[in-house]
Image (cartoon, rainbow, N blue to C red; front, top):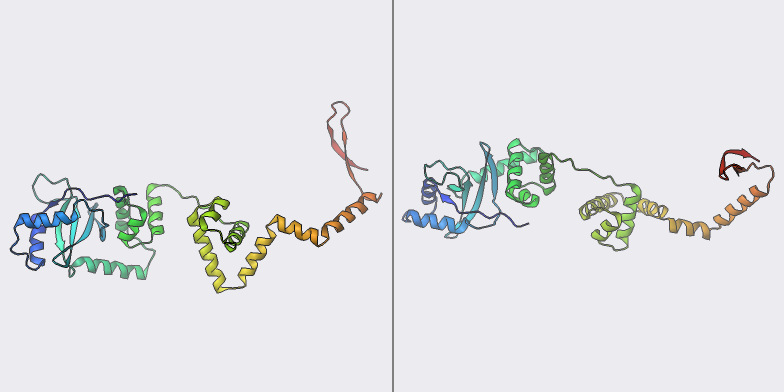
Length: 281
């Protein structure tokens, strides 16, 4: 899926002033030069924003660009406080440098996640949904919001009101996947045989491999389970061990013994069908 590109932007007078005050040797640049410089690096780009947040219910994105070997950040918002005719289009509201609040906000967010990695604020949740509405993939949103793509996907599913059906792994399926992996099959080949997604197979085998590294004896357990759930191997073992012949002898003895009760089903004389009543002979 291609990333959404920024359309034609309106650069606010405030952004022009902030660029002149924060960029060295930019005081002598005319307004048209500053506008052309900012728009040339932002318009039409499909680069990911380095930061996104919700302000008063409106999504604000921050993009990075370079000038004179220095890095600056342009805050892009659909709001425009000026009285021009461009009030409904995207506009660059301000310009930040590396010493400004974007880094403090990102660092503060990272500290909050260290305290509670699973917590997502309502503003972050709304930002995830807004980025999804713009056409960003869940992996791109994870990069922007500095979240795992699985966490982003969970919030997208919840936001869309669709419940994701989770299919549990039975021991027989897991043993089969383990055995196929030992034979050298790829994840997508195993997924095709088990009628599962490649990601599901990859994640489940990864957790199984991590479990066996902590407890090496579990490897033998899954090998035994894989062997027991393979009918061909079990029948071959029964035949080679002579268990099948012993079973046949026991059945023959029971058939020859008149004291052993047997079940007979007699046909119904009227219809020719088997009678529903059974009796012991």
